[in-house]
Amino acid sequence: MQNLVPLAYLLAAKVTALLLVAVGLTWLLRRQPASYRAASWQAALIAALLLPALSFLLPSWRVALPVASDSSLLSVSAIAAVGSGSQTGRSHLLVWMWGLGFFLLTARIAIGNWIVRRAARAGIRREPVVLEDGREVPVIESAPIHTPLSWGITKAEILVPPGWDGLSAAERSPVLAHGAAHAGRRDSLFQFLAQLASAVYWFHPTIWMAAARLRTDSEMACDDAVLRSGVLASSYADVLLRAANSFRTNTAAAAVTLAMARRSQIQSRIRSILESGVRRSALSRRGVTLAVALALAVIVPLAAMQSGSGDDEVYKISGDIVPPHPIVKPEPGYTQEDRDARIEGAVVLRVEIDKEGRIRRAGLLRGADPGLDQHALDTVKTWRFDPARKAGKPVIVRATIEINFLLLKAQPAPTGKPDDGKTPEPSSIPRPWPAIPTRAHGSRLPPRWGHRAT
Image (tube, rainbow, N blue to C red; front, side, top):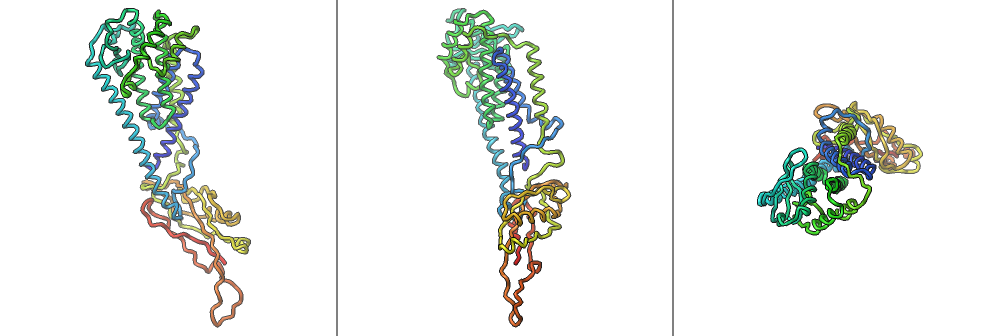
C-alpha cells in the first residue's frame, strides 16, 4: 500500500486532464446542437470509469511528475524515523475514506432504483410508445409518481402520474415524445454510468459538474427532439412549466431518474426552446464515431501515462522495504573559519540512494552555516550503503540525514604535567555513528550523531 497515495494523485490528475478536455470541447460546441455536447460528456464520464482498468492493462509510458517533499523515508533523526511509520497510516486512512464515500453513494443508487422499481411494479400499464427502430417503451401510470419521468438502465420505461387517461392527446403528445427521445438516446443508461463515476470519484468536484452538465444537455437534446416532431415551442414550454411545478420525488429516486422537468433546469431549457435560430439536429452516426475516436485519442495516452521512469521509481520505506545500511561513511570536516567563530548547528539533507548504494542526488533541507552545509553535502555524497531492497531486489529510496556539528571546550591538562595550551586533536574525539533502523515501524529511535571539534 506504500505507493497508493502517489497512484491516487496520478489518477486524480488524469481525470482532471480528461474532464478539462471535455470542458473545452463543450465550450467549442456551445453553438452546436445539445446532442453534441451531451455526447461529449458521455464520452468523458465513461472514459473516467475506464481509466483505472486501462492504466493497468495498457503498456505504460512514463513521465517525470513533481513529487511532494517527503523527509520521512529514511533518516538518522528521531523525527524522521517517526514520520516513516505514519505514511502507511495515511494510506489506510485514505482507503477507508474513499471506501466510505463509495459505499454511501452506491447505496443511494441502489435505494433509488429500488424505490422507482417498486413504484413501477405497483403501477398500471398504459399504451406503449413505439420508437423508430421498432422498440416498445412501456408507459406506466403510478400513484407515487408526481411528474413524468424516464427510468430503466437496460430497458427504458416512461412513468407518469395518476390521471394520465384524463389528459387530451395534445397534452400527452409532448410527454410521450420527450420520454421516447430519452429511450432512443439510452439516456437512462448513461445517467447510471454518470452516477457510478460520481461514486468512484466522489472526492473530485469536476466529476459532479460533468454529471450535472450531462443531465442538463441530455434534457435539452430531448427538447430538440420534441420540437423536431412538430410540437409547438410555446405549447411545449407550458407543459414543461407544469411538470416542473409538480416535481416532487425522493432524493435517492431523483438521482437515478430523468424527470421531464426540474426547477433547477427549467429557466435555461425554456429559454433554449423559445429561442429561434438554435440548431436542433440529432447526433449522426458520423458524430458518434467522431466522439468515440476523440475519447480514445485522449484516454489511451492518459491511461498509459505513469509517473517515474521505469526502473528508477523512488520508493518510500514501509513494511515491504528493507532500509539501506551505511557501509562507508567518512566524517564531514569542520572548517577553520567555523571553528574560530564557534559555530554549531544541525544540517539536514534530503538524499536519494540508488540501487548500488550510492547517493545519486542530495539537497539541503535545513542549513546551519554555508561552510558547514557545503562540507556536509560534499561528505555525504561519498557515503556508500548496502542498498534498500524490495522482495530481495535493490530499489531506490529517498532519505533525510541530519548531521549535528558540535564544539567541545578544551580539556584541562592532567595534574603533574605542564599545560602547553594545546587542545586535543579533533580526530582523537570519538564520533559515534547511529545504526539506521532496520524496520520501518516500531524500531527504536537511533541516537543522534554529532561531529565535535575544538
